[in-house]
Image (cartoon, rainbow, N blue to C red):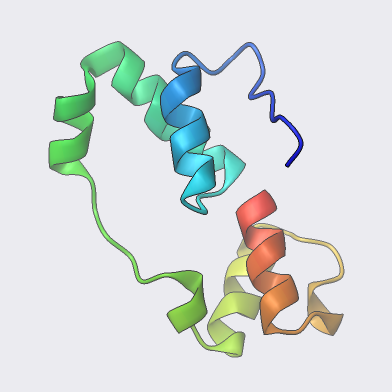
Length: 89
């Protein structure tokens, strides 16, 4: 697996990598890692929400989310491609 470099704006590289390995998007992983670096991991963890895994979403729900994020080519993607595109966003 190629090594991922989160970039200089990510303040907690270890947490970022863990979140990406769990399937979270780049944007979400960076937000959580930076919040944890600023406020502490336990503080951020205690206020976190929950959402079902993308695999549990319908194709229509995935298309809507891809549209919100302006992911190109979403209209021709199947469910697995949408999930991958959302996670890579």
